[in-house]
Length: 311
Ligand SMILES: O=C(O)CCC(=O)C(=O)O
Image (cartoon, rainbow, N blue to C red):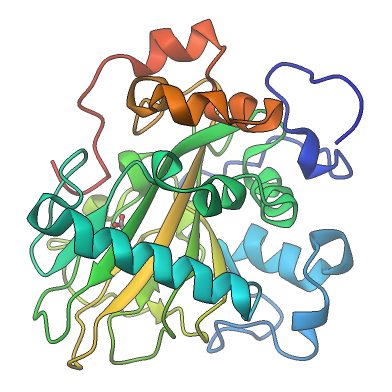
């Protein structure tokens, strides 16, 4: 990183892509035609060699039009192994307390406040390539909202309702929530992959507007399926949710969730981080966590933010 930090911008995203505010088309019927990738969650071809959005016009179109893109195998190898090991060790050590800083959920266990729980997680939140994708959704001014893990337990018999994170619909300035799902296990049809209804970020609505029961199967939902080590970037206004895990093995993912700078964090990082953690943060991490941002103090200090479905 070089140059001066401009408050509220994310230098590592490179500034190559000065995204205009995303167009909001209220009530536009979702699933507008899009170059034939409807049944594949993964951009076909040699996508794995082209991580950066500026090298991937198809991926950028997919994120803009369908509301998600998957970087297949993005952190496979030793980084995956390290994240798996740290995450599993935390699940073991926190035991029944796991995730209680945030919320608990039947059929799944969570870890919350991961920025405070390992350098490997602190690096993840400032991953340059992932931030460049997030910037496509949120524009230049955004911050981390939360970093959690979610493990859908084996044969759990429950699915999440479709939801938008934080119950968010786009406002006059466009999109304001973007989630990145770091797959620590392979996501396949039967082990509780995330489902998403492509294009619903364009609808200006939450699932409750259309569905009597957002737990139902939506006729146009698809499953995000990819090998362990892949990252899904999702416009979190798109209707999505975890599905039932029908196999004995659990399915674990990290959720690095970002929010536009003028909105509250889901978890107020400044309050959650220990002094030791704060002491070792880089300027860029401080900026992304909004530690020196009075506007964020005003917006986020008030507890009680919701996930979008866990009221
Ligand atoms: O873990 C998943 O598959 C998605 C979870 C999700 O959308 C949530 O917890 O808000």
